[in-house]
Length: 116
Image (cartoon, rainbow, N blue to C red):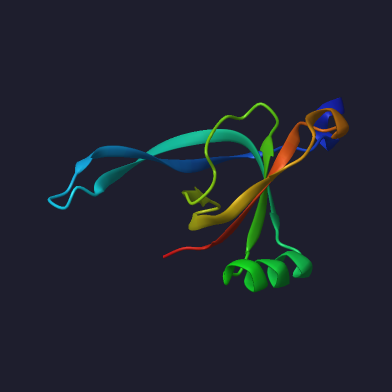
């Protein structure tokens, strides 16, 4: 048996990056969403405390909490994200832990709600 079989493993998710493609007749930006596959994302159901807190603070119901790798540079706030065959939307600010104080490969938390 492979010794890595018991290790924690993330999944690939599709993150939709927002790119401004122009402006409308009122001078407001027009955005396109460009899909990008991001590897090694941990996904777990949100805890009851996370659900209550997110509902109280943001008025949104957290369904999953994602853990993002330490060296990731993507913008995760207010983004469409697909995984497990479903579409979600991130909300609120990502929560960043101190890299040196977290022993595993992930140090950022992002909450998502069901979308669409």
